[in-house]
Length: 576
Ligand code: C2O
Image 1 (tube, rainbow, N blue to C red):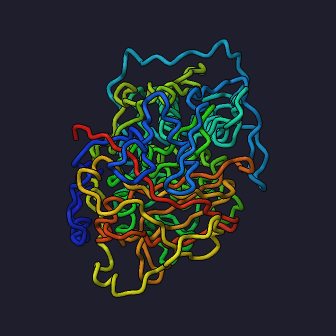
Image 2: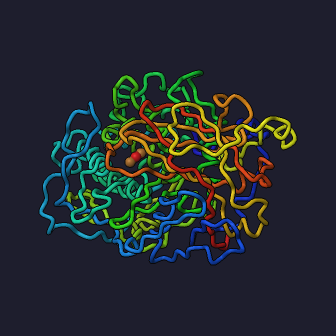
Image 3: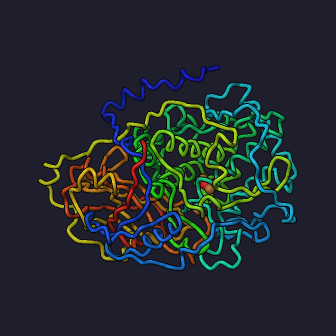
């Protein structure tokens, strides 16, 4: 069997990456947002709205209310919101997209008196090490398959069963948990907000404990799909073997090994295999380059103030893994391509294991910080444990994986320095006509490639100012969330927009939606991109306006851009 380290030597990768010079700017400061400024002038401090721990949600209302860079809607009532607390008695039938077979997603009926609060295991088995799925020993692979086989054999009404485990995702992602007495939002949602990372961490934790108990191996650890390394970019072989309990027929037939995942998939298999350099640039952009917690995790969600949904770069990156894996011949992309069905594919949990791992890496290596807010830390979810007891867990309890008894095997991060270079130099750019001259006519129906300019409230800021405040390009996007959507955002792009890829520095990011609960009542979502470093790299930091090009890639439903602004988020310096 392959040794752990040898398949992951990066010689081949690094050779191809010599065009991306090592960058170290991510490590200069450890930061988190402490307030948002909607006024660009750094010396105009009285325009800043101080956002302390207690009224953090006002930031979100603020972002939601941005009409121009200078407007800011302050919602005094939002400051009294509560953390999200899932009530087991309020689980209702899911709100599924059209065409989905109606299924009840709620857990088996319970007497809520019997909900136990989670306590950290006192007698932890030896720390569980989650390994890349392609590096499991034959014994580890056999254990994993056996555990899933036994999970599949449990009666469907056993809360530990394969069906019930899959239903957990459906219930939390399709509005089953009604928040009684709450007006906005009316249901618990774990996508497009800051609950995404902690919810999925807990989900995997109990799933792993159940699998461990089913094979009576307390040290069993869930592997991860190491799609951020070229050695792990194909669907791991253990999932593709038709005789394996890990196999699932509802996957894209064109995306079987040795085809690489395409983390920038546009639902077109032009050359079938994903481009690993694009993939690494994409991971660089969404993980290594991100400074602010809001940008990384998404915006807050709570009963009184969570009006401003936004997913972070972590969630955005993961979305494409769903769409790429699901079966395109199914109207809803089942299983992975739709959130109500995604948990039915065993690969879902390995995909999320990697997402969870990238969260730990962002904190440990790139100075990322979790939110300090009480309404974040006190948000709670319900899960059945390996003994079929219903357990209430909080976000705070999951922030340190070592307390939960697991860690991730370290492997090289070939994306760490995969920052692309600008395609055009400043001189070349200035010699060409501007991509656009006018601001967008809002609301803008995004049904074709569209360019416009966004005015910057400030330019050529000093290094110290940039360290204090990150420049953010923020869009408000209205869409039907039950439909898949992707559009790319290009800055100062002078070539054919359809040719831009993550290997171009001008490629600022992609907005990606994976079908989840229909959202006729939902408000528009925010999409924010950090641009301070990006504008420097494009030699465009002295420009008054940003030339933006939006490239719709898929999504047949109307997508509307309600707002497009530049704002400044205050980052507090930290030790790293
Ligand atoms: Cu709950 Cu991969 O999503």
